[in-house]
Image (tube, rainbow, N blue to C red; front, side, top):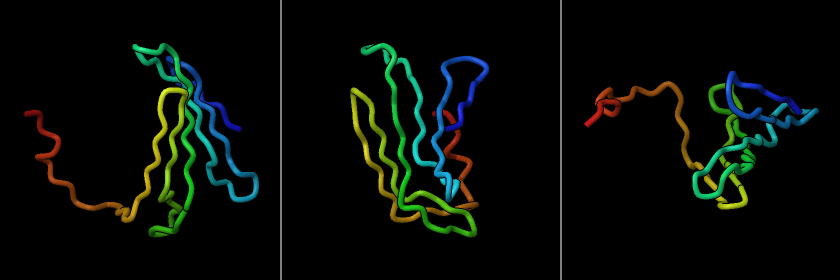
Length: 89
């Protein structure tokens, strides 16, 4: 387990597999106005090689107030992004 302490806010815990060095879980605490402080777990899985980098194609996020699973079918790196996407409207 690694503990990251940002300049402000609660620490972030990252659990890493001792054999593969891949992240297993990230634990953060977030303040939600309706519920107060909530601990949230993010569990990446289905790591695949993408241009020499292992990338998780599945991410499960769980907390006491919600659960979410994201499964990616396509991930691209270093693609051109239209600058218009970043303009406030």
